[in-house]
Length: 108
Image 1 (cartoon, rainbow, N blue to C red):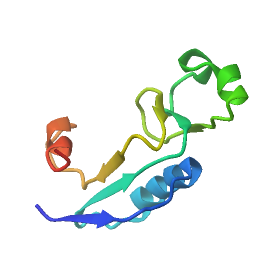
Image 2 (tube, rainbow, N blue to C red):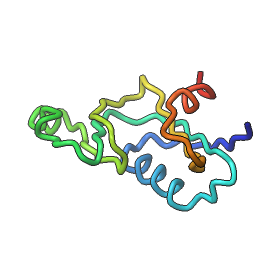
Image 3 (tube, rainbow, N blue to C red):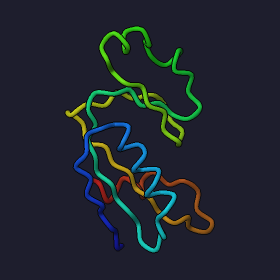
Image 4 (spheres, rainbow, N blue to C red):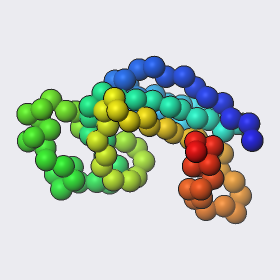
């Protein structure tokens, strides 16, 4: 399998979410893409999550931890410099549902 890695040394969580969305919207998807990135402390929630149910908003504000909504689903996660995040962007394969093992294999 051929894969393109796009280097991103930014740790700004707002930039990183926007960068991920931009790459997804503007890539040709001729080859699979892999993005690796690290965020400064932040709370990132899925597009359908209720932030007031998922996190302690007053505490996040008191601690100056930004809350960012991503365009994809999933739950709320805490990011900081201690975790490595990854995004794989692939062309949809005919007859295939979402196969998480195929996304995890290259990272593992």
